[in-house]
Image (cartoon, rainbow, N blue to C red; front, side, top):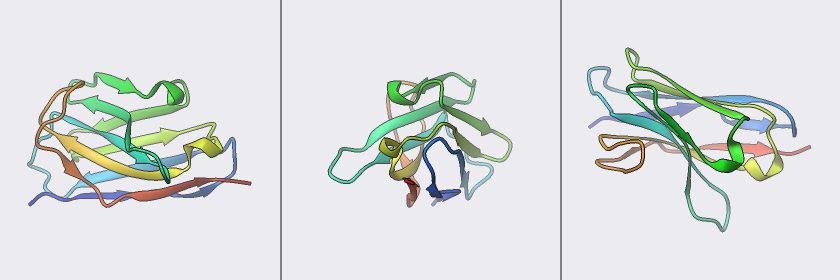
Length: 120
C-alpha cells in the first residue's frame, strides 16, 4: 500500500510564505497526477492545485498567482509553494495523487493532512 507523507505546514503571518512537500512511500509507483486539496472548518474539501506527469497544471482561482505546484517525478514528490498567504488560506491541506487526469480523479490516494494557519 502506497502512502503519501506530507510536511511543511505551520503558522505564518499574513503575507508570508510556506512550502508543503508530499512524498510517496514507493518510488517505483507512478501517479498520473499529484496535487493538493484543502478543507477549512465548516467547508467542503476543495482542489487547490494539481500537476500531471507532463507538468500540466490547474489551480483554484483564489490561489492563482500566489501558489505554485511542482513535482519531482524521480522522487515521486509534489510540492506546493504558497506565497502572499491570506487568513482565508487557513485550512488542513491534503496531498492527493491518482491515475486520472488533470480534470478527473481515479484511484485516489490521500495524505494525512497538514495544518496551515495564517494569522497575525
